[in-house]
Length: 503
Image (cartoon, rainbow, N blue to C red; front, side, top):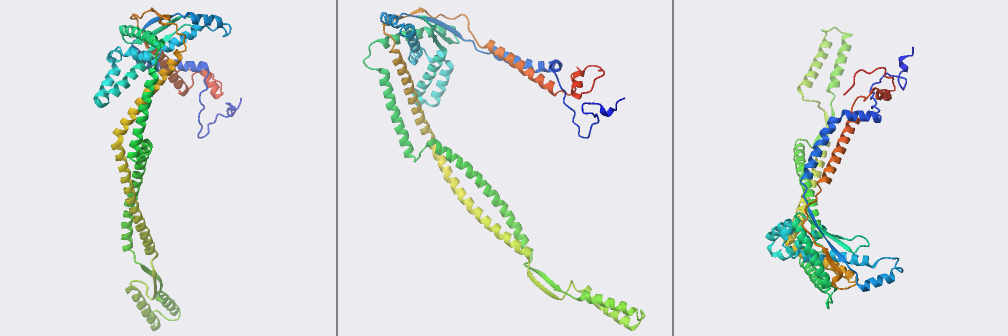
């Protein structure tokens, strides 16, 4: 029979002190078994997440999309040019260039502005209208600038909800608009289509003066004036860069405040050390005994030795022994009456007193230095505080100047974009206003769409993923072995039998 010491993968089954058992080695089948055993925990984690996602999906708003169509007819000049140059240009149809130009025109900010100017903002975007009213109530003097700002926000929102496109090699342009109300979406889309045709008619007509360029130049002149006003404001208040100087002052205030707090704390500690050192110095003598020469103890010892020597020659009651006993008694009496040793005494400076005196001088010098630092830091802190108060006093005027300049810059940017779009549109063949016609007007949609289904599906996937991760974490951190085979793989020992199953 084999020795039990040979059992196991390492040839020994004896556990030494500090032995750490090996983690169970799981196969895919063991992992699936562990996941099945953790099914209730996975359901407990996944179902609430899916329920919350489903509740969020049910609360998603529904939007209605109205749609319409244009039909583009290229003019005779365009068609002839297309037929004559198809081979030279690789067969690219001229119609596609016309369609792309018309799409840019439909998506232009001018069409959006003309469309929104026909409706009150409260009807189309009530949230923006409410925010605008609150801003006007807070700053009634800037009502015109606030109206313009929120109107541009409504234009941006309109352009996000507006869609225009065309199939390849097809003269039909499809347009669509999304809104929460079905009738409003159809009405706004029809107004947008009409505004597009009107703007296109004006655009292709002869115009002696480029209105967009003239208006952009006026805004650029106003922007230069705004920059001059800001420069004069900075020079008048002796400020180079408003933002950076204010940030620097705020940082200096925090730094000096922290340093001043540290100086005050150290000064308080030094005061306590000074008081303690002064009390110790007052209780310490400046001088001490360095050397004392006293032979009384040696004389007593010599007399006792002499008595012992006499006892070797005389009896205890002899006259010689009595005489030396008398002398011993006198010396002992003398030593008992005086406080300590007496004789030649040498005195000198006390090292403890000198050390305390040096410590006192250092502490007094440090206290004086800390007092000077405190005065200087308080002066600097007051100076920085005055600077911050100055910026606080100038903040309203600076904010107004910056806001006006930002609005002017935004106007210049919008007009520049519109001017570029106009330059692109002018390259399209101008065959009159009859080349684009409405073939299908917008009607109120009967059914809306929302993100309920995508949100519900995403919540289901997220809940399943989270539950799976929890199950895997439970399976990988669970103590014990999933099956007899797992025990055999981990320990390297044969499993003879298994009693019961762990559920």
